[in-house]
Amino acid sequence: MAAADDVARSAGLHVGMPSAKAQAIVQGLQMVDADPIADGAALERLTLWALTQYTPIVAMDAPDGIVMDTEGADHLQGGEDLMLSGIVNRFRAKGLTARVAIADSWGAAHALARVSPRDAMIVARGETSRFVERLPISSLRLPAETVVGLRTLGFQTIGELSATPRAPLALRFGPEIGRRLDQMYGRLPEPIDPIRPMDVIEVSRAFAEPIGAPETIAKYVSRLVVELCDALQQKGLGVRRADLFVHKVDNTMQAIRAGTAKPARNVAWLTKLFKDRIEKIEPGFGIEKLSLVAIIAEPLTEVQKASSLIEEEIVDIAPLIDVIGNRGQRVYRIVPVASDVPERSVTRVSAVAEETGASWSLHWPRPVRLLSRPDLIEVIALLPDHPPVSMTWRGKRRRVKRSDGPERIFGEWWTRGSEFDAVRDYFVIEDESGERFWIFRSGDGVDAATGSHKWFLHGIFA
Image (cartoon, helix red, strand yellow):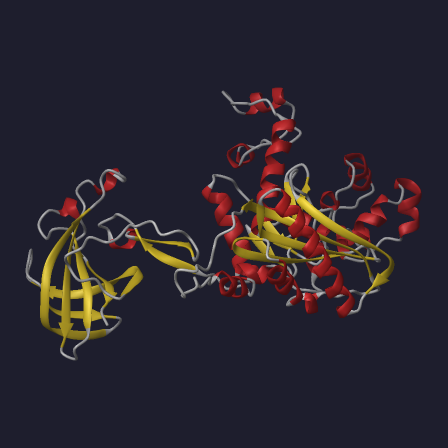
């Protein structure tokens, strides 16, 4: 068996078990022929997707993983915690199970992501040894025959193996055990060779003598931006996301990512985006090569911004959005959607997205603030159509002085069959202090099939 899902493992099956034995254990077992070529192609597609979403340094960790160097890029996702939970949730939404780990070394993250029962795990800096010492020796990425030989000698955990003198192990098994242990504990660097899309546009500059001064780095970055823009212009493209790779003499790599709200190839502006972040580059013992890669490029057509007929010049806010976005802040616009259900009547779009022309066709007032999720409230009201006489929200009771409604909203049965009978009755109420709220009753107040008849607060008026 090449793979087994959770149900199969719970029945006592495991990877490597002969298929005849598996079928003897589970009657009527369904088996599908493995397709390593298709699996590899799918993993490559996922790796390229991760490259565009998370960090410039991404590579395949075959046969079933992706390795990413997220240092300096996690702030664009709201921090490590939000980034990991986001990865797990996005894979789960596609029907895929993902386990993610962050650690000081590739080897430690590789092992923890495959052994830990948790979906997401973060190991604090300097704490790698404490987390990996109890992991099984099979987590060291050693050949299967080496693992079997070590188990024959009585080794079970990485901690036991790391506490053993290296010489006898190297004499019997070769240097691979020591190398994997050093990589696991971060004593030996394990550089990541980033994946590249086939049609990517890349320019680079190698140096006979390593450089390290900020002024020198800025000078060569400016030249690379010019070369990249020339290459983009030849293809009629503009860059949306560009990565600057810094190759150091100690065989390590650092990457800086800059994004734009819309396709661009303005040399001055792209140079500024990277120069603003040059201070984050740590040259170490020196930089031997700089590479600038247009990870995402889109067609770009020149647009006239000024006219001799009018004095007003079109103001482009894209540069401001670029500055804010590259600091890790998300910039978006809210646009209307054709839906009567309030929480579905708006959606987020790019801050520079084209106007859709959609608008709300409502005759009833709407609150300036709509809660992300309706709050359950306690209400005293005469069913089915009378407005409330009092409302208790978050422990505070409010007497209702004025009200307007009900406005009935029906469920969207054409998109969700469960909403065929669903009904909400909305009221605008004002309490004795003059505050106005938008509340609704789930159901029509008579038929239980239309809703729970509980009351909720959904919005607040100015």
